[in-house]
Length: 314
Image 1: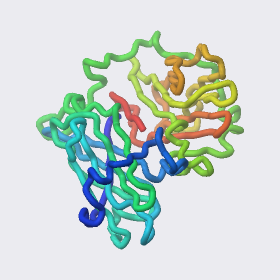
Image 2 (image 1 turned 90 degrees about the vertical axis):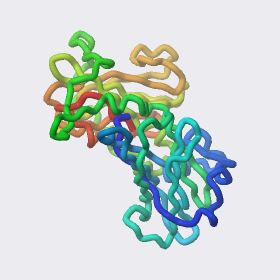
Image 3 (image 1 turned 90 degrees about the horizontal axis):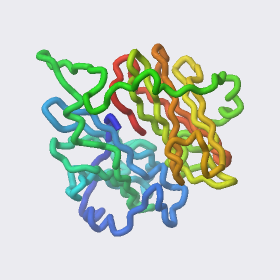
């Protein structure tokens, strides 16, 4: 994940109790306990931007309602050693722009040298404490990825030495599919922010993306969903559309145990590769279709294909 944000705001720790007290029972996307279907509004999301000289400006957010008796009361973040690096309390009477209906946001600093992985926590007055551990956020590589010239401007490089450009012969080739061919799958599209009747299902369905630059221009996009698979319930397709609505590629999956289109063919993990040609319009939107829970998407508004040299994960 090539960082962006993190969110949270203030109340009284004496009222809410210590962080350790709030960690006696922790819910996650994979373990929702008695609160099945509640993960989307409670799991705290994370984004980060590297800071010149070291460290990161971070943003954490939840998308929870706010009433006098039911609201997010606290955000906090711990590093890989369990050290508390950020803590913020919220009040239902706080009208700060960072504490609103369905948008609670915390801004904080992740110091240089912080141990990974980061874990974000959110405590709800009704549904308890929820957390997510960001295994894919490699804090050690952010400083190496960003360089500045003598004027303090970021130097854009095609690719760092640890991630060589893909060769043209490595570009995946798929049958051409038109937007009209997939129109029937887009009658209703679900997202992290709008899961509709499938609350709590976004973590299994929304496709993540990692981009790899190709020698001579363009990129290979690797899409990932972490969804179970049996004869009656599985991911049927991954595809990408660019900002002009062009279908860049479609990968089809089936219910078989040895699906040849799945690169990492494991239970709860579907991985596909699609070519993003030079000149593709931004933003890219990744799609995944489930034969039970429909089509899910994410639009990658922060990805600049002209200057892109890394990854941007959900």
